[in-house]
Amino acid sequence: ASAKSVFSPFFEPPAFDPFPEAASFLSSSLSSSPSPPISGTLLLLTLFMAVSFEYKYAYSVVVDCGSTGSRVYLYKYMIHDPYGSLQSLGRVRVRPGLSTFTNDSIGLSDQLDHLLSFAHGKIPRVYWPQTKLTLRATAGMRKLGINESSALMSLVKSTLENKLMSKLNDDFQFDHDRSGIITGEKEALYDISAVMVAMKRDPNPFPREAKHVIDNSIVN
Image (cartoon, rainbow, N blue to C red):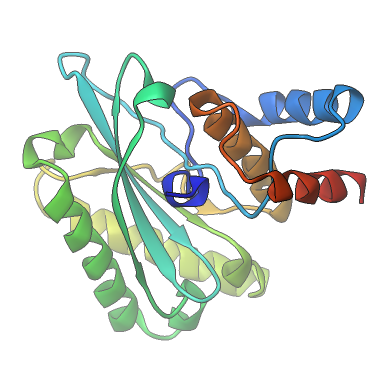
């Protein structure tokens, strides 16, 4: 499996801030490595877990809302070693992108139901209350005007919260504050951080040809 199939959007274990580390990684790559390890359009999966430590494992649900569709990624990992033990439980993509639902609350609700149903079928029910669900939107939502995108994201958040709260605290925890539309700059930093995650698991996880892509991306 490719690194992209394992590390999709926005993964970061608890207490990990990707931005300073990404900047450091980028700086060291420019100064000391003629051939930085990888590139591509990988995103880093956001994982902010408020997990009870009586559990050996933790789970993460991440919804990546792109321009042409939304994907949900499911992960399992050991609390004491999130990088080394990260496992993908599956992913599913639905179309169209969130930006098409500005005047279609029913269509939006149906799409979110489809994504939640997939997650519920993969993660053991006993773990649902300890599992954070984070949603990040990228280019498609950024293309909307500020007022339109803000209104739509508010609708997305309220719809998700209502669906999850309807089960009386027996469902995933929606991370309202850390969900939303991210800037292009943050998306790029998550790219670099995704490389760091992949390299923690495998010092040479990518084809040789891919190494030259990040060379060009950094220089240009």
